[in-house]
Length: 121
Length: 132
Length: 130
Image (tube, each protein chain N blue to C red):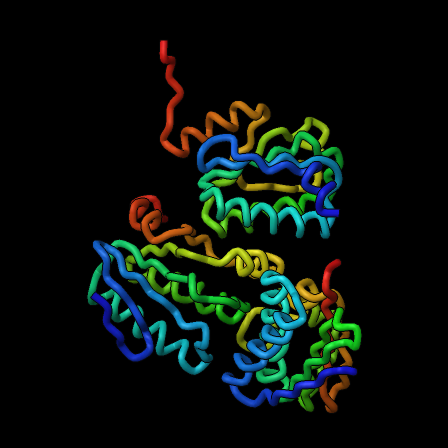
């Protein structure tokens, strides 16, 4: 089941919500994106939120901060976060950039993220 | 023969466009996917600087004559950077956001040079060479 | 150049989903970049769930080398796998402590202990067949 809600594309699978952020997200959209996502989380009450990064080619410090903000906000409404599908070149670049992504449990595939739901802190 | 492309940086969309252009050029030149991503990310950081701190500017992509080097120049007519050394320190920030991104961009690129005068503007020039 | 690097830093699949990376010699910025790219390619191809970084061949540990190791660990973790370190020499251990370096991962002296831990992580047990 997939629904769009003002810029946020998400999917509900079992006890989790999968969020697929768009790479072209702007400064002006970020607050809206986070707000919409939080509304979804509060309404659907998942155990975890899974952020799908598989379509993202570039993660700069702005995108990184956005992800961190989303993770922190989700935690405040009681939802833990994991992420899937980060591309190798993005992982390499992010570390070289010196940006620190919050300690979010990372998985290669959705299956792994769903299977390990209880391991996320 | 140098190839020259110029993109204005006036809006958020322009940041996305600039880095897409830089990535495309890098790909054409034969840079690896990892290097393409390093370049795109560095451009994103510096272009965002120009937009947020520099009141907007332009980006230019230059390919060297031998096709081995990509140079990206981002120029603005903003307030300038009073202390460049400080600005290069990770975590330094004036407005919202963590740092100028200059430190990060200089790690991602092979060369990075900043020319900045208070009250005049800032010009950042970055280069990456194709690895043999 | 890449040939000699592959010889100096073998990446071996020692068990299904377990990669062993043996770093030998001096780790500089360039070697680290090359190693990381190779490692991530292997990691994806072998669907690694655990990566053991063996540092027995690392003779020099200073702040720079430590930073390269830390960055490598961070990059691997971003891709998903657990990271285990083995083979830190006594003198290297002392240097690390005096420099205040912390790798923040499980560390074992013996490779076989690191392997046991990898098995644990995967929920596997070695039992006698006799």
